[in-house]
Structures are given as structure tokens and as C-alpha cells.
Length: 391
Image 1 (cartoon, rainbow, N blue to C red):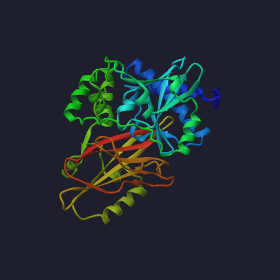
Image 2: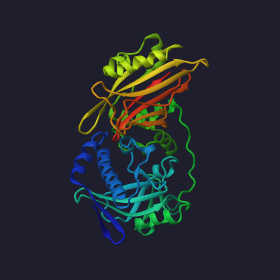
Image 3: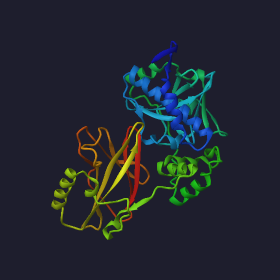
Image 4: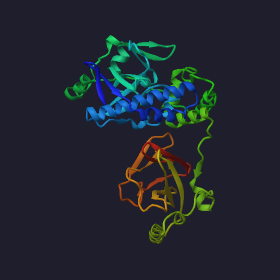
């Protein structure tokens, strides 16, 4: 529900069920400080997305390149959303006086994180409300904001913010070519060894503000790479790094026990179809294995079967085909299930999504050389499972 705190400010109600859900999800963070940050950010994000979708009919969604929220909120507040071909950064706060907007430097000076607009969001769990009370652009924040080198943030006072969100939407309609961003200095590329050393140094959960422990150019380069950020996040939670499956070993029958024949994991009907397809594909050196994956959804556990087919190519590369099948207890995949091919750094290269009656989905076949690393991610309703591979 949307009400107006003042003639220009928007106040959104938080359904009571969101409070418990947000608190439960926040427990995946390493410290009490980061858990509370996650709690406030999640409430603010869900309320703003709902308000934009329901009251303004905007197709607002979480920005894909910063969608792994837990690994962000472990270190810094804020989240990125996309609508109307623009990017907005939500900065939540518990501040009662709403005297200023303080934006962490990461959301301003990381090239892939920066937004067109910055929204000041006040979150009050006790009142079960979220208020959008002002906004600005990246250009105004950089040009007019005060930079505090102690906590690495840009600050704008209330009088320098525009309080009416409808002005932003009107500007998008009337001046779609308006320049909202200013130039950002590039960050260095970290080697794998540099990243590992930094993750080892900052992975101690007793360090409450790792973002302030090293120079910003190093911290920014580490945080902007999703794979490095996740590695640091897992270290702070004491979670071992994900296992990398070495696919070329399958040609020597060295697949580990979690990978089985596809036929053994499918229903009898699907198994027959697989045998017919397998016979047609006979030719060059080929191997295929499958693995049962689980997605722990809020009210159920979804099981699917990931299969990978490898073929040797004449140019000494490998041809790779990836499919996703329903578990043997289901006839079809659920709708809106996504299968994505990610680079080693976490960049999305290809994505396919299931329809209500699909018996399987598959990525376009691709080729890669020995030693190439990639990830496969299966996602439904923001719950995902990611597997790492190397040829």
C-alpha cells in the first residue's frame, strides 16, 4: 500500500510477513552488524520494488550484475534496481531526521555498480514502513556531494535532493537523453593471486569493516568481480570454496560419484528419448554425465538434473552441450526456471528459461579450449545453485 508522508514523499507499508522473512534471510551474514544491514536493505528493496511496480506500473527489477545480495550486504549497504532503461541505487537508512543522503563510495566509483539515480530510503521496521524521501543523479552526487575519506562516502544534504519521485519519472519521459552520470576512473585488474591474498587477509569475520582496511582501488577491484566478492564472502562465513569439476577427465572415466549417467537419473520415458538421441549422435569421441541438483525454495525442495555432453573437435577444442531436465518424479520443468552460462568472473554469457510444459531446456552449444573455466547456474525465484567447471 502507498500513502504520502508529505505532498511529495512516498511512504510504503511493509507487510508483517516480510519482517520475519527478511530477518530469516539476513542470518546468512557473518556478523551482527552485517545481519542488521541485510535486514534493513532487504525490507527497503522489497518495498520500493513493490511500490514502483504496483503504483507506477514500472517493470522494476533487481539489477542482474549485482543480484547476489548477501555478498554485497556483508560489506556495504545499498542495492541496484533497473527500470525504464535506467539504473537506480537504493540507499536505506534508519535515520529519523532524514537530514542527508550518504552513499558508500562503492556505488559511486565502481564502474559496473554506479547508477543513474540515487534514492534516499528511510526504513522503519517498528512502524512497518519504508519512505522514499529524496533522490539525485550520479553527476550531482559527484559534483556537489561532500566526499568523506574516513568512511569513504559521498554525502548530499537534504536541501540538495529532489523530494518528489514523480519528477524523476517525468524527467525520464521528457528528457530521456539527459546526462545523469559523470566519468569514473577505471580500476586495476587483480590477478588471481592478488585476489586470493586479499581474501585471505580480509576473510576474518572479526574485521567488521573490511572495506576500510585496504586502499579503495584494491577494494573496489576485489568487490566488483563477483567471483572474488563471493570468495571473500564465503571465507567470512567459513564456507569452503566450491569444488571445480574437471570435465576432460570424463573421457578417462574419472567422473566423481556425484556425476552419473543421464539415463539413470531420468524417468523411463525421458530415458528412452535420451537413448534414441544418443544413438543419433554417435561419431567422434564423446562423453556425457549428469548430476542431480537441489534448489531449496521457501515452501518446497525442487530437484532437477543437469547434464553435460562433451565432444572432441577437429581444432583440438571441446564441444559442450548443457541441458536441464526434470527429476524422474516430474514430467516437466517448472515455468521460469533459468539455466545460465557464466564466465569464471561471474558474467552472464547465455541464459535460457523454461516454459510451463518444457520437458528440458538447453543452452546453445559452445566450444572451448582445454583449461577454460566457466560456471553453470540454475535459478528459480531468486534461489540458485551454481556449479564450477574446467575443461
